[in-house]
Length: 637
Picture 1 (cartoon, rainbow, N blue to C red):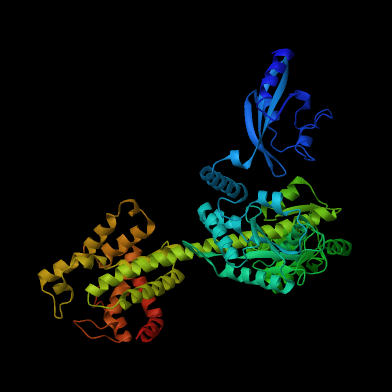
Picture 2 (cartoon, rainbow, N blue to C red):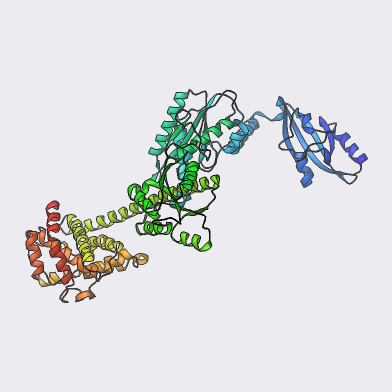
């Protein structure tokens, strides 16, 4: 279009619109400073450029856009239209003032308010937790200077929750913590999700005493909270809180509270406020409440003094002049030492000898070591890493590097220990559930057999005693601790096949006929077949071990047992051990068809072959632990 054509178009628009103007590209708002000729934001009585300049957007995409703009209480509709005038890009702005009567009818006015309210909620609220988000803090809160209590809350070990239990658990942990905080604050208070696992609390007009008490209550409530579906997950939060100073912005107060929060994280599940904080800042810019022990091992007194000066303001320093003194310190303090700074070349005992001793005693698994040496040849450093050192610091020392490496290494090992604790707790919970399910199943079998569940417990105890003695006596059998645990657990299922045997036979008070005994013997095969039909689980170690025990726990060393007539070590050791435990407990327990024998008598009957023949090694084990078994029987009674 030519300039003349545009002017005619604009003249027609002026009969409709309040303001019609043509802006060249250089006059339109952009990332650069606006032209002095036309500062369009001045028209709207603003001192800065519009955050949502539709004219600038129209110039970029050559389209047409419309928005509402306010000037005081007046409302304007602004339409920006792209035009090329004499080959130059321009924007025609059409501005129409609207009044309250013509703006919108009452019904649609309510719909508009609902829409605006929903938009405001989405704009300023965190989708996961429902609290305010970081944008709300930036747009609404950060520049306020009203008196308020300001706190930073950090969920301890949040990354570990995600890594150990999955992101769903992490999300639930965040929601749970947010709900606890929300339930303990006023409607006038602001709760903001500031970062991934960090929250801000802004409590306007609160008194210092009430502020401190509220933070303590929130900390305790979060620690006592249960994450739905993850009862073994123990929440804790580190909180730093300050009272804002006169004319201090919320943003500045947050910075001060953040430092106190990091001081609280040294303890975890702790609240630190200005009333409780240590007055001196550490070299890392964060205060410490608890001081950990660092052992410096170096034959140079000067080097020890330099390192003590670098670290002594934040850690308790222990010193050793050689490796022998270092090992003496380790014997005394053990894991009470948070980290060792170890020189390599020393008299009496050098650093590599210390590392060898730490590996033998497994100290290296719990106590990190940073090598300090002027010997930085590749073979020496490589050998040190191979022996378990966590890091290497060369002389002469750079104070900031030494401090940061020490700080990071201690923090890393603390997280590792916490992760191990979480994993161990989770594993124990699963093991407990497995044992519980096995016990319930075996209890059902014993109930049908007219016996109490104590028989199953006795079998487990007896099996464990025999396995312990057998492994002390010989290494003939492959019985590592984890396999022994499997055998003890699987022993509870040894008679599971009896669930298919008729009650009249199971609970017959007198002697079984040959036909009845033949039916009774089938419980071994029935139980094994039940386990063999478990589909995807049939190859699991627990199921295979239980299969061996179910099928062959009535086999005998001389081959005269059932169902397969196996002899000697063709019978799996798991079945051999449970067989002896089953016979012993059957003898010392009262049954519907017999009275209980004394423990000593039971042992003699087994040795004399009254109950079939057994592995000679197991017979020796039985004799050697018979006094312990007698105590177990007495305690059970």
